Image 1 (tube, rainbow, N blue to C red):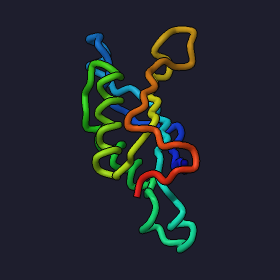
Image 2 (tube, rainbow, N blue to C red):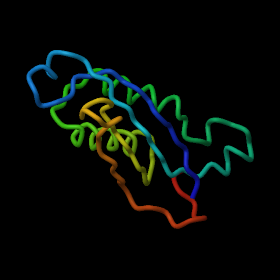
Image 3 (cartoon, rainbow, N blue to C red):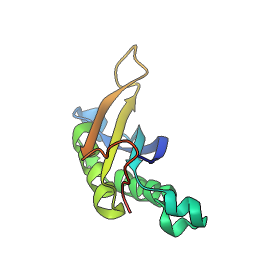
Image 4 (cartoon, rainbow, N blue to C red):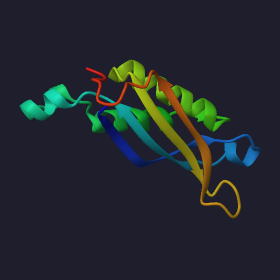
Length: 126
């Protein structure tokens, strides 16, 4: 299984259940692993045959910056759906965190996997 990934994508948004959280933008961080067969891209050296991680990142930034959620769970679920539906990703793992949300911890958040995980070595995506 090939994995295209994005790590520590920081986006400012409205997120949280408390009144003060509804009034200030907070930074969330995303880590994303996406199953995608990159063999044809590697063979041809042509971006047309791979998963364009810049396009994925730009889409997620636009979505998250323009959104207001109470829960990180909802934000993660909707971000995962965008990646799967709009970028033809069959499986992904997404980690969404809120740095500094809990005193004494670096960050808190959720990790989700969506889609059927391809067997190791099997073609995914495309």
